[in-house]
Image (cartoon, rainbow, N blue to C red; front, side, top):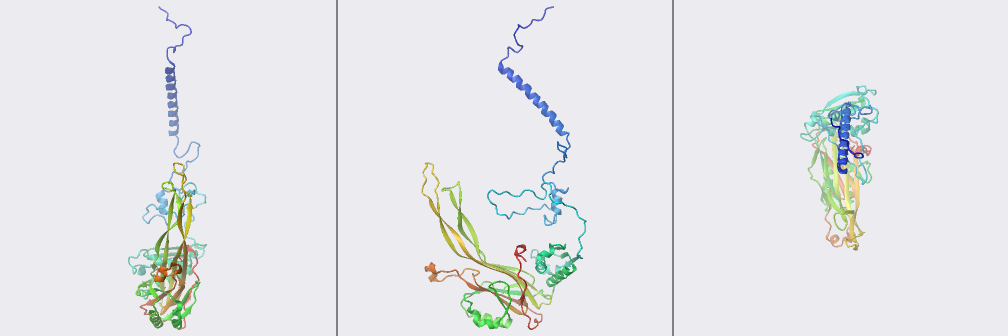
Length: 460
């Protein structure tokens, strides 16, 4: 038997392989080892329960999951004020914050992360430590009368909040105020229920359903109209600065209209026969936009590296009128909110801006850009009035900006330096029409309630 031949001494089994081949073999072997290790690790992770992580702690809730063990759809539908009555997902309200460069939006949300406040389910019963009672009021006589007006029940809710105060429903005494087109649901003390019942009766009352309020808006260039008409009117107390108020019998109101008709500086801004039904509201708006250049912003997309920043202002008047008669129809009550705004002039400002360096390295001379700064005047009125319904209420705002622009004379157009902002005495006349109720007792005077505080965005 032949013995196997041995390799010569000093010769390696891979001696005939090149260096490149040896490197390839080592690379293949190392890759196979990594694949085997990864497969084993994947098998270990697959056996781990999905509700726990590798450190033995519960996993964080998935994105969109509720913190209260509810699905996102159930949580959204169960929150008051979110979503619709059919349970559709709520739409996120647009942000009212003015974005500032470099700022970040607040993190978190209803279902993001762990709650920092202690939340409990409560006792499941309505608190009645102040003797609160549950009442449901039928408001269909009013909502059916207004027809297709959207959300007519909101007028009743607004008057209740004006009479009771917004804070009465969000204080220590637990209360509920909710309304739809058919009923008004209230949970509060018996005293508060009495106030609510009085307001609802005034809306659903059939005796005053056919009565309406006539509203006329006018301006007089010269306030001397008072010379011949002041004896026809009786003054009433008012709260707003610069405001004057009077009441007068309807016979004297006819004499006042005849006297104003003789003047050439009187201008009316609405139809004389415009009426507002009892319990309804209306808005008179003459606001008109005006654009101007308010500044410059840097830009890299256009030469010379700057572009004008335009702004827009509104000038004119906005009048909100909310009337309501008393239950017997003898007294009228109205919430009047008026805002007058006028741009007196635009003050020009010239800015010197550096020109950018060109590709050739030459810095051209700078440019001059003109911007505008508005000079404005404003007047505001937000007050509640009560007066006998057989009398006419007249309010004067004083010499303020007119609700609409007035045509200047030829001299002012030729010589602008003599042109000044127009001013006029703004008048608002309110009359109750189709009155079939008996006249108010003699000697009764009009009065105004306390000035409406600037709460709840000035709505009430």
